[in-house]
Image (tube, rainbow over all chains, first blue to last red; front, side, top):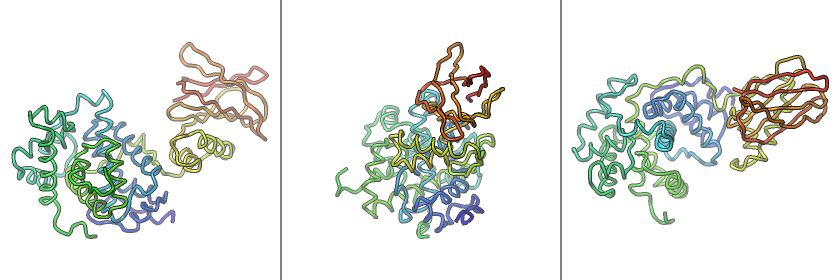
Length: 191
Length: 196
């Protein structure tokens, strides 16, 4: 069991690893370790983009694994891709940290949309995402840039755009569904 | 969230990082018993992943590549006391779901750090919580040793070790950040361990 996941390395997310996901769902330490190896780099880059602090980003990833380890039944294979789950956890944890600590406060709202990442980026994916964001209505794009890329809260977005919070919620939900339709081919979650 | 409610647009808000911990816990609790909502969360997570693929994966800094679940090499002489410390901490750690969880976390997941005492005295080590909430001093000889914590100009007595078989130990639950610990035996010989 120790070596079952040991040789796995980072790879394209669309290829799901059923045995790794099953081990993670069963809370096997080896699967957690393998997941850290295969998904950790993506989680780290996600956290780093928000936090702009390598040590804070590393701790964020570490904390996500510890938090999930303490929670029984944190992940179920029926949910979908383990990497998607972990990256979302890392992103939410980074946002929480960003909003909680003063040191990150200055960065909120100042991080631009995907056309100008400071980090190393994949030009093909950047183009794909930029095109998908470009296909949103301008109202939706305004909300996505602030709420998703900028890390602003719903209230901050509402105040910034002088629209009700309910409108922000609606635009954000619609925009994310549209992005999903653009970025993820039909039946991509099947396996 | 009511039991019969589905998560609705909360799924997208979760994906966009707009829910607080209590709200996330609520939708997770619902999704645990509702496969449709569980799959919906999986779908919005795929959207997040697609957006985040713009960034190439990066290895965490080499100096801090401590895997949360990596097995560690532990010096044999303090392995047994370390296990005891981890179990003891397990009983004191209210957030852990069981002492076994806490012990596993403490030992395997790097919950604690450790430092070797250096000086003229016996071989000794201090294990301490990363948040400095406890210190556990283990001396590789039975006997009584006085332990002090030093922070700047302040020097605080933490107590004395008690013999436990072939070793001597002191566990202190004290949320203080010390620069180093001092260990003094009956002969007056002093050792110090730097807390990093």
